[in-house]
Image (cartoon, rainbow, N blue to C red; front, side, top):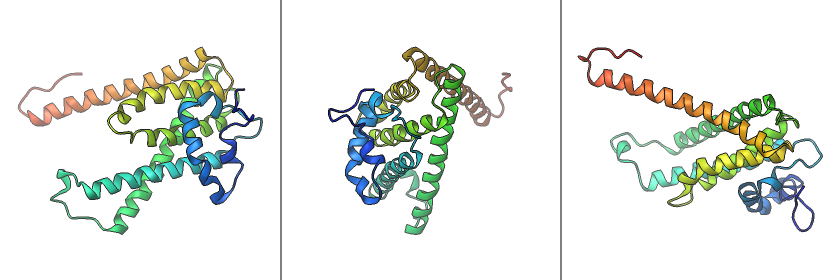
Length: 217
């Protein structure tokens, strides 16, 4: 397993510390999770430290949501100009709900992707290892998305690359099996999204043109 020059995985400094002592390692973990996935997501011979990964994801998600709230308060959307402004408490509640929902979403995504990996023999180290990798991965990606001009464009492509590299490293499997597992999982999601968009478009057409004959699917 490839490591740093001192023989340590970059995530060791984060997972091996407690409390505020972890903070200095946050940005090194962020860089490793994005640009050194074969190192960062490799198993370390111990049980998957999901708690440390969940803490990293929570901090990254909180920073992202807070940045979004700050931008909306400074540059309010024209669609919300006529609406009654919400108070600080309401913003905090919405922030908490958003973080909880996004956390459940990441966990569900990790389980979904691990299912395909397991079916193809690319998930031999267990669900916990996949969950650990996906929490670090999506925590780094959610901050990458804020990169000016190119963040949202990079997100899906880099996310797919990290999924492949993360599965390969976390489960010590071949690049082909990791790629196939990621491609099948992502392909099914895209197909479902395309179908949902198609159905929505048909419904919108019927709503805007109620006199038109119904469209048979």
